[in-house]
Length: 335
Image (cartoon, rainbow, N blue to C red; front, side, top):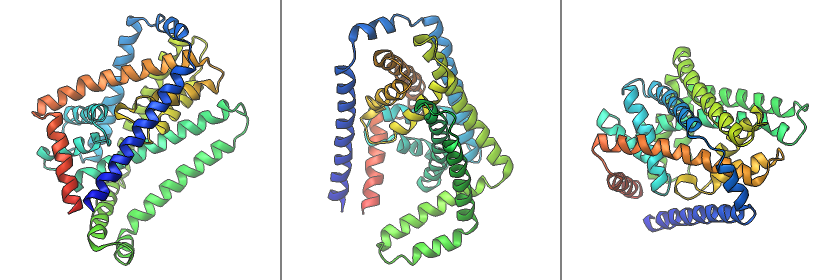
């Protein structure tokens, strides 16, 4: 069982590396280096610094939202540094271990593994909703049929359906557990772990059944995504003065979806490819689009690396500690 899981993880890692390499190779082969160099010359350090401040504030609002999901059992500064530490670890180590790093860093605050994981899953649910919303808002404009309201109806329907499903699951959680218990196709060990995970997730969602708590998380995540959008738009204007907001909307939605598939650590290649392809749909030159995408990626990685590495050091941990914790937990899961 362990060998099978290990080989599966290695396969995903290899596929991710290959996808990133292919994306980078395609971009490099079809892009004029002189145009890229000329585009980079437009960058002004006096513009970059305020943009990085915007990113920091966006991360602070995300930290605020996650802290609410955690029932405010940690401080805002802890939440901020742990989130950045997770992003930093994902930049260095494979298999998206950054999420495991966040769990690891919550343990000193009294959280068990199955207490912490669901809070990250709930955060990801909000991320998915915002990412799909931005993508489908920008899609009709990218395809040049902005008068068609089908995508808007689809988006509203998706959001309503997702909310209804989550509410039904929370209100009928005992029936959900009973249904899982009766699944004969699952092994007892896997079934018990699955039920434990589902129970934890639904418990985390139940904390958001309070309208005030839900509003806090929603506002925090909305402001985080909104400031990230402002960052992308202002940076895009540096490279493309005539750019409009809808381009940034589609770009940020596309990259959020694009980097969700397996890739190398740091999403190198897929980040740039997602944004480049999204902007090319608006007729933007691929060299300029790539230059913008690369700059956006570098600034994001710079911010998370600065605060993430500081967060690890402040807590007295290293990347080796995170990796070891991940291996130990995986062994426990396989045993």
